[in-house]
Image (tube, rainbow, N blue to C red; front, side, top):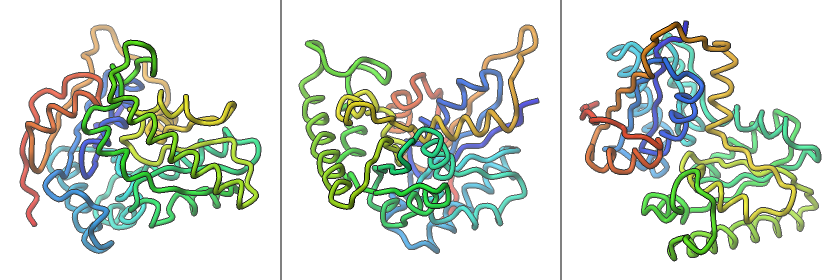
Length: 285
């Protein structure tokens, strides 16, 4: 039986993890919390991030009955996973180790590239997780990509084909930014004598850019979506889900600590379905 799954992020990006989970558990109950009042976590100290993340985890477990917790936030996974595990009594999974494990399964050369936010790159969490998998990883911060995603400069749809005559002109800007970042990263890899064949998307916003990223990477390079990799780990943990006759569709309840209207507007893009009414919750300072 699938448990109630709680999903936590500092903002909206973790909804891509939720989307991947709903695809694998179409009849489960999900509770999502975006700590939008206190983002960005990346500008805070490790101690403050740990306190915020622990409060959010306790809300999902103690007040919403989550029996399994997914930390769909790279910064919190990198800097606060231990604190979250200490704060709750249910199993907790972050997004970084699954992404590194998926890269290990995909890579033949043992050299991988990682693109992420500045805070995640500064933590070197992906580098450490990849090293634990026997991989050499080169990380690069791509700070322009998150605002481009939140502006909607990603293309016609989450799953649409990048490029083409019908592509909006803004998409050309995003495509050029991606091209520049990846050109810089591959040049750095060559200078260090690496032969990368795998790219890890180390930010939960980046799945919305995957079609553009796949067009920009060198031929044959595999692109690993850590949101999908995390959902795969959860699916393996609970096994195949066989719905009983007349089983209800996935139940989804979303909470935010601020800006619920923005959450509803952006959230439907990340989730690829309506979020429903987002409920406001106050977790304190």
